[in-house]
Image (cartoon, rainbow, N blue to C red; front, side):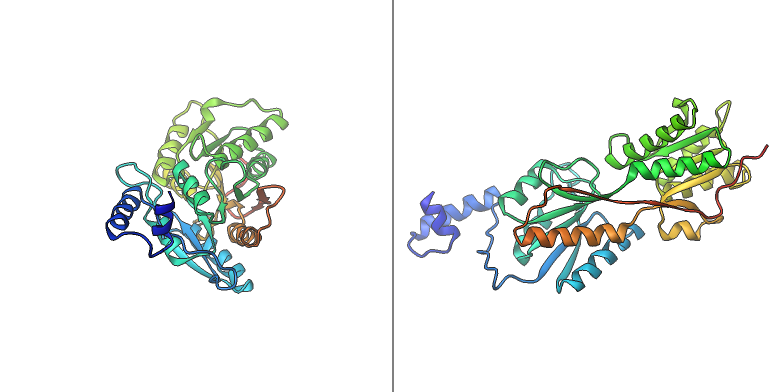
Length: 322
């Protein structure tokens, strides 16, 4: 162990052959040398790692992180990274780059991190914060999300207030935190209104637009199809619009639709989509400020922060046709 430590720290009192053997072992184990942290020389640099740069979702997150970083005098490096390779193994190339750049901290807006990746971050003592994590992070990991249960409740209450009683929900993945919370809010609204929960009215489409289209077609084929549907993302709502158009049905004359997120696509849809606004930019800015506190050595009493959602009424909802 002392010899390996000398090699890692660049000491000269190691024989060349021994240095070669230790270096080969380090490479074989995937060890990355992290420069000694010097607060006085630390770069004012943080990383934002997202799953993809192609969506308006990522654009809203980037906007919020950049504004907050600018106010704090930080620079942001943006990386798009899959958490797993095609072979199913955890990807680590982007993790190595974090160390090579000497970033002071990381914001993650990824579908998930593996246990080994969490362990890697802990091993290298890199402060990080999760933005809208799909699964419950390990204990002690800071995260920022939205009030998904309240959003699902509000969306469903809006449809009920218009007079709809046959209200369906098209959710994302079954086991994700945000999707489960939105469906729970939907069910709570029905229960408060004294309406029976119908299992056939709950469908899952994995936040995929084409799957949402198929789930809506399945709902329309029921003996008693819904007159309104709460769709747990704006992108899935576009798939619902497509399914209704295929059947010659109009929004909202025949079926009312409420989405979730309030992405630009919600305003561009025809008719404009009533949706629950998820404050994506504010979530990213809050996460950046939480990261700054971690970088300064302050650990919050609560690791989970939730920002409120609100309903944005547009043209996709109306009372049911009698």
